[in-house]
Image 1 (spheres, rainbow, N blue to C red):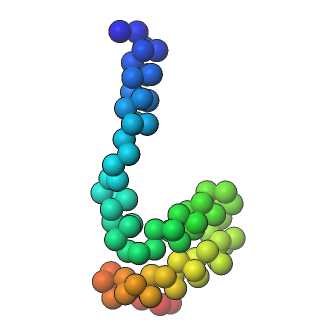
Image 2 (tube, rainbow, N blue to C red):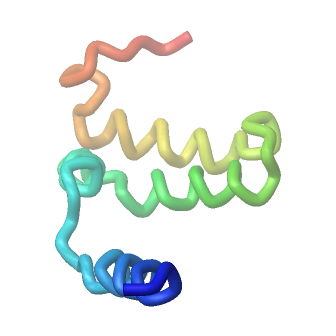
Image 3 (cartoon, rainbow, N blue to C red):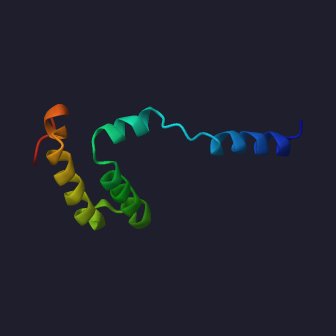
Length: 77
């Protein structure tokens, strides 16, 4: 099998994987998956957390609303 065929085969396997992995399951269990995605997307686009304060506040509010701050023993600073 050529290197090109191997790369194509490997990339097809990744694209066919629709099952949530352990990370996805963990994020979905928090009840804040959408907020997490928006926060992550903001950071990806701007490369600076300080420019994503609005998204961070929305995520924090969701995190508290779902009781995750008690579950993870996070603290307000």
